[in-house]
Image 1 (cartoon, one colour):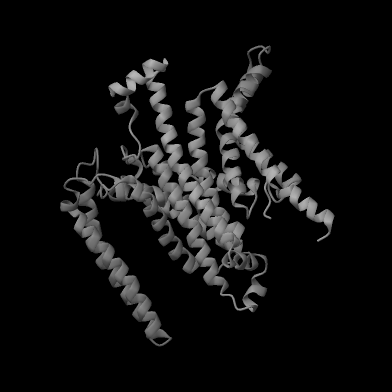
Image 2 (cartoon, helix red, strand yellow; image 1 turned 135 degrees about the horizontal axis):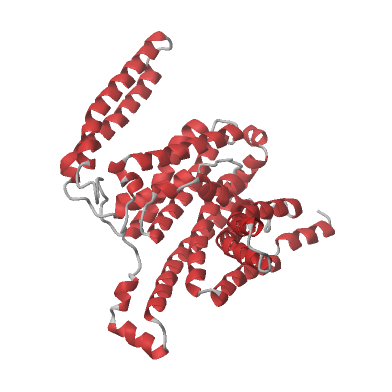
Amino acid sequence: MSGANMTAAKAVGGPGRTMMLFGAVALLFVLTGVFQSWNLALNIANMALISSIMALGVNMQWGYAGLFSVGTMGFVALGGLAVVLVSAAPVPGAWTAGGTGILISLILGVATIAAAVQAYKRLPKGRVRNIGVGVILVAGVLVFRMTFDPAVLAVEANDPATAGNLGGLGWPVLLAWPAGGLLAAAAAWAIGKTALGLRSDYLAIATLGIAEIIIAVLKNEDWLARGVKNVIQLPRPVPYEVDMQKEAAFLDWTARWGLDPATTSSIIVKLAYAGLFLTVLLILIWLTEAALKSPWGRMMRAIRDNEVSAEAMGKDVTRRHLQVFILGSAVIGLAGAMMTTLDGQLTPGTYNPLRFTFLVWVMVIVGGSGNNWGSVLGGFLIWWLWVMVEPIGLWLMGAITYGMADGTLKTHLLESAAHMRLLTMGMVLLLVLRFSPKGLMPER
């Protein structure tokens, strides 16, 4: 590389540019706190931390290996489900009513699949194998439904107004975060074994369809997580604001400094969440940076750039794709568990591709595909824009229409502020792709 090219490369991805970009994004959060409220700024920052972790997971799949997966929403939902299964309180009477039957039926379902796979491997090709596998599957499905359906009806009939599900193990919620990663990783293994052999566009369609199936299961299987009735009052790893406001020492401290107890307790809780989320993000950054700079990371980038050449050099491309697909999905599942913990409830109806797939991809593309720090930058910038653009647009439209007479045009302009989010996301994406195609922080 010539001296001029080396200088240009340093200018594009140098530490000065990185500090400037992160400083500019940090200034947006500071201005939000100064001109609006620190509670709002911390709310946005906490979700930005979680979104950055989601973007890291997508970046591992796309930036490291070139896997075009749009099933992010499904893995986020599985992470949220893990919080319910691990940390929610057990529902009294649910296991007695039908929990054992559900567990037995699930074991029978897995055994049926395993038996069908073994029959497919061992029986000779032809009609005998087809009939044998078909008989095993049909018999297994019949036995499964005979065991599963009555058990589900019994569980969902148990206190349906407030429960109607099995509940969880009642363990500390921090244990649910790695469990969310493991659950997403297990699903990614099952998906990857069947879908990673597809071409990139077909892989995208397959992962999007599977994500929709996961959401449909969460919405309709009440015994699992109450479906659209939601699971509320999930445990949290930080104190409750109401409990803090009852402490005499806390009230004395706020009175001494002239602070409002309600506002101060809310800010302290959000700072505690931010500390937990930031710790997880920094650990993941350290691990992903170490992986990217290792021989494994160089091999993954070689596979991404030219699969044929990498395979000719003896690399098992399919196995490595499965490996990075599982790792990226585990990171996304971890973020999903963190988000459900922050919300304090699981609401399957809120999972949609726009928020949990498209927006995360915009974060990766704008920040810089293949650059872990770029994904973090994109997560903070895009999430701030997603939250703040609509109120800013409403203020802007109010200023534009201030002197206008009441009428259809003024009403239309004011109502159009609700569409500023999508318009802004599109404009940001187009501008970045036009003037910095590799993102604000390109891969070095």
